[in-house]
Image 1 (cartoon, rainbow, N blue to C red):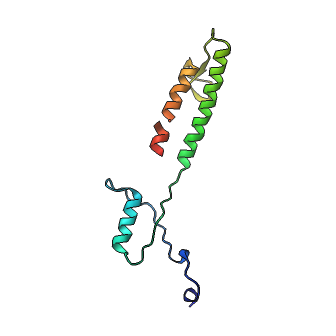
Image 2 (image 1 turned 45 degrees about the vertical axis):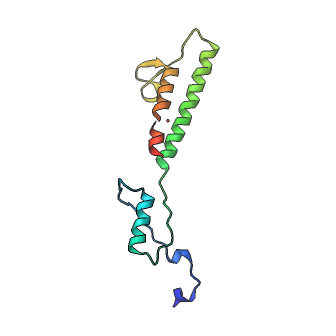
Image 3 (image 1 turned 60 degrees about the vertical axis):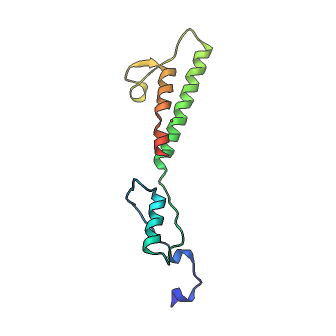
Length: 120
């Protein structure tokens, strides 16, 4: 009686679908729409796909940080072209091989630019 007495609201008919199996021929959105149109044609209205973008946000933040370091070392080199800046590649810059900082950050940013594209 409670539900029948209220005006109809979308949240009364909302269904949460998680872990949709991948289909090589359809996107997740197309797959969900196809499923509901075939199995519930009289009751299906629409759907909205929501993705977890936390990993993408981490990659974007890391890339921004790397670009800041690249800019820092590029400016440092431009002020003193006789000495190329270097950086150690290990943890916290304390261990690892000493390499050209500008080349290192250029490569790291490129590796990040491909991971970011794949994550998108």
